[in-house]
Each structure stands twice: as C-alpha cells, then as structure tokens.
Image (cartoon, rainbow, N blue to C red; front, side, top):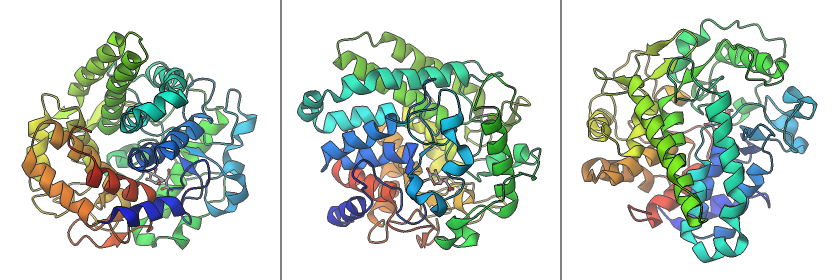
Length: 420
Ligand code: 9WN
C-alpha cells in the first residue's frame, strides 16, 4: 500500500472544507465517513483533519444531533434522497446547513482525540479541542437522552437502517418486514450509475428505507413520538463508549473533570452485556420495538472488541473462526456460513475497511497479534483501487472506487503504531 496513492485519493475528494466519500456515488459530506477520514488525514494533513470535523459540526442541530449527510445543494440530483427530500430548513431546530435528519455512528469524539494526538501543538494553537468539546458533549447528550433504548437502559437506538451505517445488514430484515413498502416519494437510484445493482441494496429495501425516512421527516424528526423501527446496535454503542472514553481524555486535556465520561463509557459497556449471544460468540442487535434479540452474527457484533473488554478474547476467536476469517481472507460483514450470505452484496457479506479498522484496533488493544496480522493484510491490498468494499474470499474490489475512508484508514494502519 502506498501512502502517496492513498493521499492522492483524499486530495482528489477534498472540496475545500470536507472530503467526499466518493466523488460520483456520494457527492455530499457523510457524518461517520468524516470521522474515519479525519483519522487518516491527521498524519499528513492535520489542518485538514481538523477542518473535516469542524465543517461537519457546523451542521449540528440545536438538539445536539450530528446529521448523517450535509448536502451540497448544487449536486442534489446526483444522490437520493437529497436536500429536496429532507427540506431540513423547514424543520424546527435543524442546523444551519441543509442536511438529513438521521444520524450515523458516533466515532467523532474518538476521531477528534486521535486528530489532536497527531499534532498536539497545532491543535492547541487552533483551539481545536476547546471548540469541539461542547459540541461533542451535546451530541452524546442527544444520543443518551433522545435515543435511549426502552428495553436496555444505557444503550442508544438507531431509527433507520441508514443510521448504523450498515444499511442492508441482515440484522434489520425482520423489523423491515413490518415496514410498509409504499413510500409516497418516487424513488430515484442515481447510486446504480456508480455500483452494480448486485452490490447495492435492492428495490424492496429502498421502498422501506424511504417509507421510514418519510415518516421520520414528517414527524419533524421529533424523537418523542413513537417510531416503528428502533434498534440497539452493538457497533453503534461500542463507538459511543469508545467516544466517551475519548471525551474523558479531551476533558482532562482541557483541565475539566473526566470522571463522568469514564462512568458513562463503563455504563454503556455494562449495558452491552444484554446483547451478548454466547452461542454465536458475538454481540447481536436488540429490536427495541418488540424487545427481542436478533440472532445473527455480523461484523457489527464483533466491533465491541474495540473496547478491549471482558469479551474481547472471545470476540477475537469468533473473528478468526468459521463464520468470519476462518472461511474468508478478508473480514466478512456477515456470517460466511449463513445461507443468505452474499460475497458481493453490500453489508450482507463483503469486507469493509472501516469494520476491519475497528477490529484491528481491538486486536491491538488486547495484544492479539494473530488477529491483528490477518486484518492488517486486508489494508495492504487496498491500493491502488481503494474500493468501498471487497469480496471477502478473493479481495476483488466491489462498490465504488477511490473511496475516501478506505484510503484514510489504509494510511492510518500503515503509519500509526498499535497505541496511536
Ligand atoms: C446511506 C457514505 C455512506 C456510508 C454508509 C454506507 C453508505 C449510504 C448509501 O454510504 O450508505 O447513508 O447510499 O448506501 O452504508 O456506511 O457512511 O460512504
């Protein structure tokens, strides 16, 4: 993997204020993409890493939410649903920039702390952490207060399959089956001009995605109203816990009290235990509408390894076992032994670099060199295509190419030491 090639991808996708995930398929700013991108940018472009996160937080809503997408209205025809769908300017409390009303996984405080650590002097000169801190506090408060799980206190819920960032994961299948496939919006699929239909969610899923998004939008994105889709995702909550730990480090750096953040991180970690599935050897998702666990092994359920907690060694064995790396060369997003596993179809089999990065970070945290070395090999193969995801058996590129978080995280793995 050449760092120069990866930087060239990030330079080409840079707009002047933020980095597009991919210039064709994803022509706007995405929330957790910016987190991962900043983590890679910090090594060679620390100013830009800070700008990436600041520009995202400029779109924060008054209730603290950081939106899933910040729209470039000049490219509204190039991706759907766009600004014309959300019309966020007409929603009370929406941020100053046109955006989606949904959210994505909270990797931002973790990213902010890693960005700071790469260039502490530049960060302090720019007042970076002091500016980020209150906004990150408000973001976590939003998730804690407005997105609290009904069934497992301490966990936050997602209200749309776009929110955990793993859109068509089999985890949501049962709940989506309860959702009407009759949106009133005419669905456009500009995404299919950039990735083949067999690598993107299908029409039936899109109909339900739109129905749910319309419902949420028409409620004014108000979280007090009952909603027909709600999940506690183990990856989303593991990132929240990891980001709470990062907020503790940020608070300490700013001379503030870190204790409450560490306490919250511990509380989330303890609550995650309700999602543990011993037979599968990983965490699963909780359908918070009906209060039942979805017994499917996915990379979302391995992600809490990131926290290096009591289950981390067992998660490492599962990652190396038959459902994942025991049968595939690159970490699959879904149980490779499942009947409906598909090595090309988006979050139903392909290997994603963001998830490999989370698992690698966990493997390194617990000193599991066997898992770490297998996962590192995936990053070595990212160049020159820097694909969105790969076939977990062959490594063949899938989805769009020159994908920013692939390039960014490949840089991070190439440059950063285990404790960086
Ligand atoms: C919907 C931008 C985003 C990622 C998500 C990934 C995909 C969008 C889509 O692309 O989702 O947000 O159109 O499918 O699933 O994780 O943030 O890269």
